[in-house]
Image (tube, rainbow, N blue to C red; front, top):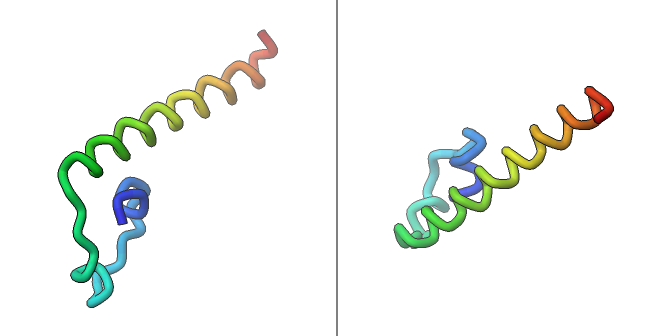
Length: 51
């Protein structure tokens, strides 16, 4: 649920109401996904520039 919300594809429905998410899970997932995004962008830039 947190990952889908991070990329903006979260669906509204009955299934989402059954899932319990704590704030700690949201924060940890957000930090990990932001780090992965930054590393991905850095890697792409590194490959394109050839350095």
